[in-house]
Image (cartoon, rainbow, N blue to C red; front, side, top):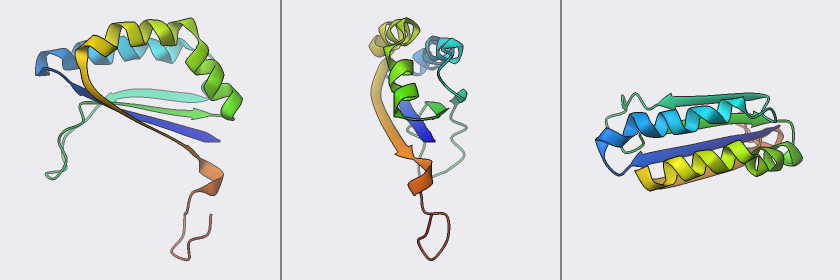
Amino acid sequence: MIRHIVFFTARHDGNIEKIREGLQMLTGIPHAQHLEIALNRKSDPNSKEVDVVVYGEFADDAALAAYKAHETYAESIRQVKPLREMRFAVDYDQSQAVTSPDGKP
């Protein structure tokens, strides 16, 4: 499984809700096994920069590529890009993630 996590910061605080709304349309793309769009609670006192998070789970690289090629993905980018300051994305293979103190998956 591929996990896809994207963090967004807004250019202005007034854009945060508009960014969330622009990303919310991604939940209609059928290629994700699971997709969430959420506002950062900003409860960690050392990290309050991120405003909006996208979290997705995809069966494989092909499903993630199909998601990114979908016309709704392009429309979301068109709406959100002018409102955001930064975007950080991470994709990783869950089967290769360390899940124990001995470093084994």
